[in-house]
Image 1 (tube, one colour):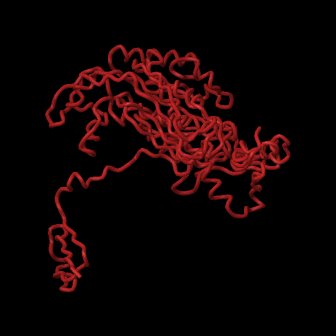
Image 2 (cartoon, rainbow, N blue to C red):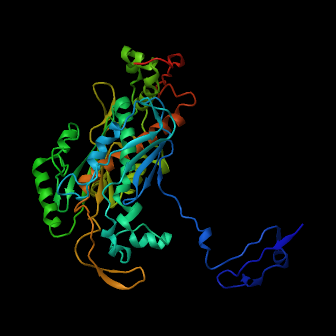
Length: 473
């Protein structure tokens, strides 16, 4: 049998270990049919570009497409079957995200009309991958001629070149916020499931633009509605502060500059640990739904999330998953949860959320500095978080930069860009939160209901009847 010798280069420039020569036995080491060599440069044909376009474990979403390519979209894998689904379920949030909707957003004109091309048959999901596509119709590639040579400060142009050795110049390619169309479309599916079958509401709004900060307590998270947020172009539920925010954006917009801001997101009716399945069992309406094929799976899921919190200890804590999801959005620079950094100014006795039992016999907390999650698991209180977005990198003012061949130069970026990203970031944040909750919901079932439960602490899971497979509601 042919063999080849395994040789090793010296470590840190030395051919000795602890002052002794490498033993003759090691020098004679050989491995059959293996040849290992070390080169200073890996051939391009062997280079592998790491993937990073898929999110989720059970409810998986892969986004694709680029800002100035043929289009963008997503593939949703792991979506349960028999969900009524159409383009309209996604289009509402896509319209909230689309460009050109007001004077304080990018003037690029796109309808962002989505099309489902697989995974849905006769209005119901089939359990197979769902493909959603949105065509690009208003590209202007020539606007990026200067940026093909010079790097935009604080943009991903330089780092993409450094990592991949190539990049899509027009529109920023995958680093463009246009990539988030796939996220928002998939988030629409997750939000529908969570709302219809769990009663969960996910609402985000703009709480800060530049130096205009919405005071804490002005917005009542118990009664906040979507109509309040959508009542103005900046998506701030308070009319007075909304006008101030719009004025702040207008002030920099006319100068070719940009500002950042903060998006606050809340989750109402989040899964909790409580004794509630008896109410589910006592409801005749629920019993009928359980017998129907269309609602069997979701009545199943509803009984799960009503009795158990979402999230797992240590690495998969719910707030950690939410932070990763939010920080994966373009232009994000910070994440706060519950009391956030302000909690560091309190003592333990001031910060702790004391428990009590409400009139329905449910365990609640009198305050919510924990942000609705304790020990990485949702406790049923309102989940709240804040995400900071930086000022848009691409601006119309002269900036110093370097070219791809490392020569210093000045750049005035052209193109159509948001003077402030936060008004359009609102549906993006909601989508990512929905994707996390949906993925965690499916993980909760797969982990916690395969084996007998603890009857002292948990409630039984109501299994759907198989004979109702052809029933309808």
